[in-house]
Image 1 (tube, rainbow, N blue to C red):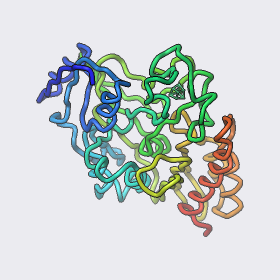
Image 2 (image 1 turned 90 degrees about the vertical axis):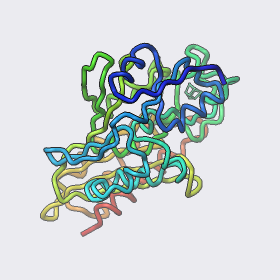
Image 3 (image 1 turned 180 degrees about the vertical axis):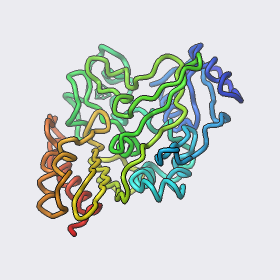
Image 4 (image 1 turned 60 degrees about the vertical axis):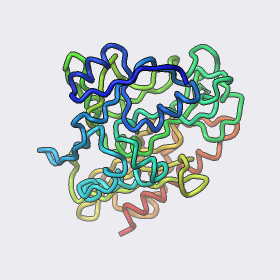
Length: 327
Ligand code: SF4
């Protein structure tokens, strides 16, 4: 591990000042410390933000939900408001990582986590994300777990967060504060960046900006929602495919539909064609199959991950059936 300095500010202004001078924010450290041990990441200065007052979960005036960036994954998953209002978020968190990691990792850190591409974590392999311009070992390598959507000829790594898939489906925002105190919000869908020609740039963050919260908008009620994750084993494993679905069904018709997929995209993959196919229709087995048939539109499979195209459609269809029923 390379040498680094560590500061632990007790107030937000002090933390932002350190971040504005090149310090790297750390809270749970469940991704960053691993990457530092492997010398994939070599920050010279860490700013431990765990003492900052960003630990609240609160219903917003509009009826949405704001979750502080430092709320632990396990706390958010178990929070009564999260469970009652957005089960899809609670389920996505509970299906993530191990219990030990969920007790340490934070909401802000979860959406900032870096890819699990094995070549990215192997400092002897070519990787444009870790070392821009060096190439992509996954393109000609073992790419079974890699993305089929949103890829480029520079990088095909999946985004690993389950939570971010649920947040993308619900069209949540990320709240940010800059070192000069300016605040802004960015939709999750715009915050996480596709690789394009700059796979090393993963988030729409300005230098020194700090994530303070995520905010899920109010949605019409009643709202049924849930998360399905398909993986090689049932615990401590990343998704091959996943589906986050939320449906507002009233008087026998779907009035609002939110859908996104994970394990298949370089970013959490919103499914607008699936949503459009659902709105205005009556729940039925045929509707679930027709809507899910759009889930993999635009997919570009690699040598070893062609199975994800069909698996994604089946995952979405199954989760539509689970959430929407067939009444
Ligand atoms: Fe690196 Fe992306 Fe290629 Fe993986 S897929 S080796 S992260 S450039």
